[in-house]
Length: 314
Image (cartoon, rainbow, N blue to C red; front, side, top):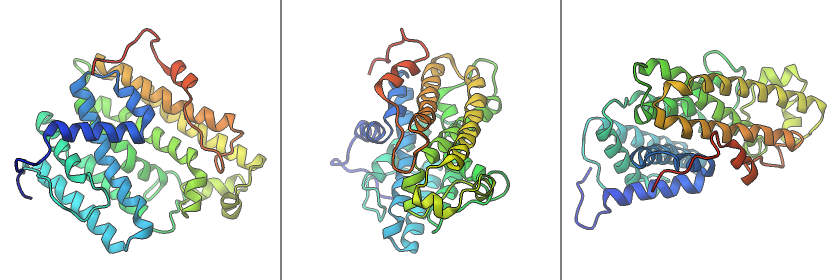
C-alpha cells in the first residue's frame, strides 16, 4: 500500500470519521462511549467503524457479484494482516463498498500500535462470520453446534468483546481470559437482540436467523414468518428467544466487575441500552415484522447505571 502524501487526511481526521460513523449507525453504543476517557473512546470508535465496513460489504452483497463481495472481504483480510504486521496503511482507492475504508484502516492501525495486546484472531473470525452472511438464503437449523446460530453470533459480535477488552483493560489481578467469557457473552446478547429487532427486515432479504428447530417447536412455519403473522405461537416463540438473549445479558453483567473501573460504567450502560430493545419488542406486542423496537429517550435515561454520572470530556 502506498504511503501518505501531504494531501492525505491526518490520523485525527481518520479517528474523527470513525466517531461520525459510530454516532450515525450505533446511537445507543455511541452514547455509551461518551462516558469513556477520550483515548479509549476513539479506539472503540475505530473498532466499531472497522466492523461497520464489513456490514457495508455484506449489505451490498445482494447487488454485487459473489466474486466481488469475496474480493472485498479478502481485501479486508489482507489489510488486517498488514496492520498487525506493522505495515504502514495509506489512503488509496480500493474496490470496497465502503468509501471510508482506508481512513478507518488507518485509525485501526494506529489503535493496534497503541494497544499491543490486541490480537488479530477475533478480527479474522468476524470476517468468517460475515462471509456466511453473503450466502442466500440465510438459514440456521439449531442454536448450538457447528454451523449453529451461536457460532455465527460469536463470529459477528462475540468477537467484539475480545477486540475491546485490551482497550478497556481489566481489574488489577484479573487476567484477559477471565474477562473474555462475559465479553463474548455480551456480544452474543447484542447480536441476538439485533436479530429479534430486525426479524421483518431480514426476512424480506431472505435471511432467517431464528433456528429452524425453534420455529418447529412453536409451530411457526417459514411462510408464516415471512408473512408477518403475529399470533399466540409467534409471541411464545419471541418470548422464548428474548429469554435466551436475557440469559446472555445476565452472564455478561456478572463480568462487568472484571473490567478496569473506568470501563464499567460505559459497558454497563451499553448493556442496559441494548437490553431495553428486547423490552421494546415486548411492548410492541412482539410485532417485530412491521415495527422496529428502539431505545427511547426515556428508556435511555432509565438505563443509566448511575444517574449522577456525566459524559467524559470530549
